[in-house]
Length: 593
Image (cartoon, rainbow, N blue to C red; front, side, top):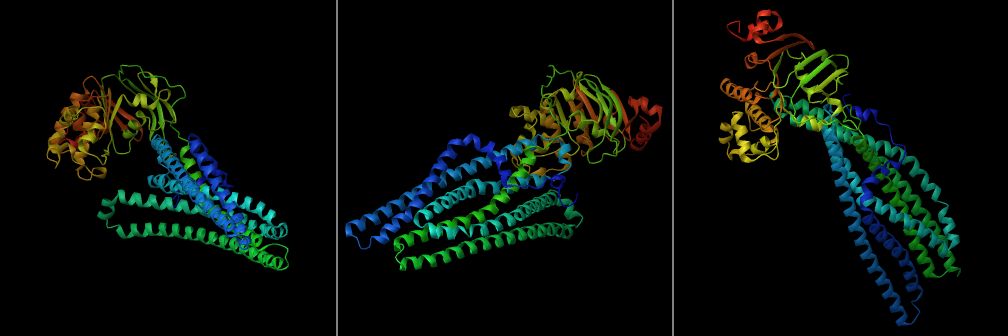
């Protein structure tokens, strides 16, 4: 897919506003707040409906005694004060509820997404996920914190207003109700179209965010290849499509609002014309007509407001569906219902039996084809071979970022699929090929390996990874902020921070994926010494292209096109000839070990 994610393409269009029911679990913990908000809402609606009665008394009481007239005005003022207080209380509780619920939704979605496997992220842009967490939740905030309250209030005003209209003048009310079907039809017909347009608009907004996120995260590459103009054009195209989708939604909503309000107020004007003749004929008092007029305006205003809010509810329903998709996203990698605990202390025995694996995005190509490999506790095993041979994929499977389509992977004799991921991952430390540096200090980046580590332990890990020297030269030393994705560091410095993080974790199983590829010769020698020292008593699986870093490995496994081509020590593999010997000749000037 190029324009929208697979999730968006597979999405089933909403048939009703009932999608908002998915918000119920988030509202349930705050039942008291909901009750207080509803009580305030009923109070304000009731007071609003009583106000025209007071106005009628005032109009019809102009000929009454001054004292009685003053009482009517005082009563009207008291009702207005009660209305003001009730409105303020309603606003407080409703807005508070909206902020609280949206904060809970954002946290729930983030918690869910953070636990999804990398396989799930192959089919969606990170920027789209962030758009859902921000833009879509903002729409829901607008609904919970405003639109629903206003809709309920106007619904009460509509029902109460119609009842009081009947009590004021059944004849005129009957005429008013004749125009209701004419108002409801455009709401239903245009509302369906509006729902679809709202979903389309939100999809394009998310796609725009994803495009921008990808470009900004790769800004150096974009600039290095002078791709700014094309990138701007691509983003401009997506943004323009987002605008056009929003324009169609806005136009449809504007047409619906125009039709509804015009029909509503036209009917009111016609009915009032008839009412004016009834006053002249003495069939009703001026106060009754004024009262009817106010109720008619209330009813018409309520209908107009509901038609407008309906559009907001449609957008929120679409946003809710998108967020629910994240909360209910199916992940191919899941923890078992009753996980088997990993025995402690962890020995570190790793076994792959007949493992077959294909990446979800490339189902026709086998990344690993029938791999069988045993790593003994405390053994150092090196995985070498050409790029794309499947070496890094082995580490991905050992961390259970993915599950193989066939075969089994065990740690200390227990299938990884039978354990909780957090359980066995706590016994592993990973240094990825592309080390991740967080927008935090150098100290906090290293402490990521073990959050409860002391400052002294952090510094010891940095020294062991040959990172202490350059950290001490930073402006604030270990407290220096490293910038987003570690923009202040070189590639080699990033790798040393990542290695220090793994050293600090002090895990019985250590996985290194090209951990020294970006280091200079001097730093590589220092880090290699640290890794050798760290490997003592631990299981070490290291992926490397530079064979000099793995010459002392207990076992070297040669991968080629997803299969194991050879296995043995450095000397034995060189003597054997084949792929490893060719790689060795290319890398060592003496052509031998």
